[in-house]
Length: 452
Image (cartoon, rainbow, N blue to C red; front, top):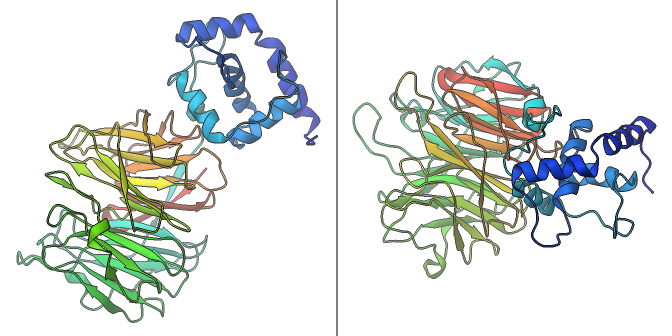
């Protein structure tokens, strides 16, 4: 039997005595969630579980459920032999109850996400330009890239090796004429950057996508791939230190895929026979997080089919040789899916919607989640406005953060509910290595560290 502090067991006992079976059934009926067949995770158990999450706000789904089982918080047939299910199964059971579980005459109508306390600490990187994407190597080493947006290209790459106290501009001499869409780093010295332009270099000159690498902290850069003018690469992802891929907007009805097996120093086009087939007017978003890879061989990228009601997520399980797709609840056009985050090969989040169009407009934020590796997606949220980036926070199970043009949201129940904790910062990219190493970047060269 697992050992827990005595106050934990007492708290669970008080919870079980206070929320009686009759009261739980009242909650379930009020939510319209009464089962019509037997389930391994019945609604009554899930309600008690959600209440227990209030007691253990820093614990994951599985650990909270383990504590309930260990304390014998519930009684009934089969409970003594009951085994703790996976976090994915718990998330699905929670989703069946809806966004909120009403609780008449009890103070439990508040969503779990509203209990999260989060804030940003901002840092000046020394760049005046819009920063798009961030990669967090560890609490000390952070790489950032960007440029363009609503100004001439002004490509920028900066990094810190002391947790944001000081920043170095490590942009290549000719990098200011580009827009950097992605940066992938493995340590303080080695990084890969993707530049894809929109013709906004001040002279209306369009430059093809290119990939560059550094092995000395950005002191020098080597361009290792120049794309055709017809290709526009959106994002790069790495399974490990050596193996990675990148995806482009469609050419000839298919999404070109690049592959590398030596840390980004050499790239080649994947076998055309296995390339994902695009819908008419379907393309990706150049956010740096529209593609994500999870070792050893899983990767996903999101799209925006402008003339189709559902944005799609493509998935490979064999390192890019073959691809499948799933349609998501996120609408296609005008933005589609702008950012993906997977905490493992099964559990992922996607955000998209419509960006703000006016000074007082927050846009429309839409989120979706998968717990089966991207085979199916279900709606979660809502978000409190359009969000350009999303990231799980490793070490805080079921906790994620989303950032956008006019605010940031946090969730600690796997994205089912979100709480806005900032309504002023213009942030475009976010990446988290841990609860103590979670950073976002945005307009005006700003970098922001999350406190949670």
